[in-house]
Length: 344
Image 1: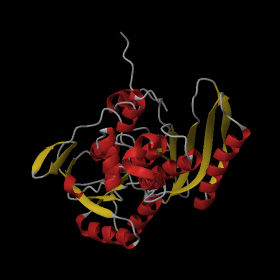
Image 2: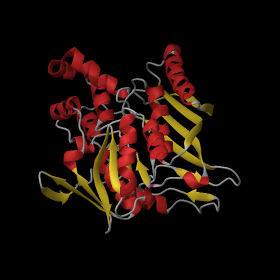
Image 3: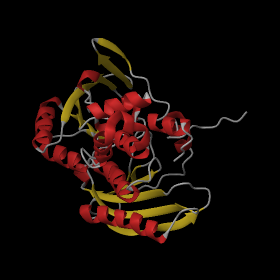
């Protein structure tokens, strides 16, 4: 019997096998496809390096155009780069697409790009058979000075691990928007509105977080926890840098409304999609300065652990108990969508 893969990202093992078969790399390719690396980097000669990122929006259709820009910017930001140019693919369902919907999504993309001074340089739009909701895919190109490039492989033993805002911000917003009726009896209208507004406050963008951190001190690595949440991000960072990550779970902030929603859906908050949080590594003599700079800008920041010499692994401590952190097989939100037959 053929194995059917679940909704969500490919496993790291399957992804690694796929990447191994990629064609011969061009000599100007600085960073190509790798597990744990979210961006490609190309040296086009003189001037800044160009950083490339491609990401879809599949879990939600609400504010999808604005959403698309933010998630692509997040990964560009984790490389220390400035977002410049966007290519967008818009696939729309045949049953309920109207000119008004096209205008609405386009205006969301354009508004987000204007705010961040990103130029839309092309793309593709079509009405697609078999879809029940819009799917958007963005390819974003950014620039970074050669001596400012930050890679997830840069984290070193002794570095502290910092986490901004908390988790799982994106999961809170998605569930608040996609399952408002189910949550209304538990949270009430005020709670539903608060969860839905997590998209903007504390927000799913980490662009400012990254810029503040880079200006304040030395950052050796950054990673944006998306599918699989903080747990997946920690494992990806450990594999990218080749070391152990030791994490104190008591320092990982989970907003009360996020914890309540996770409890209602029986979701592990560590394994739920977590855009909005920035995971970064910094040398011990810079970590506190960066943490204080972020908090001075109104961005919550917690020192959650450190990098330790050893083969890649993630160890967590909670209530004095230390154990290996399980790697999520798939995102908790993907599980909820699959269980309710609400396929993105």
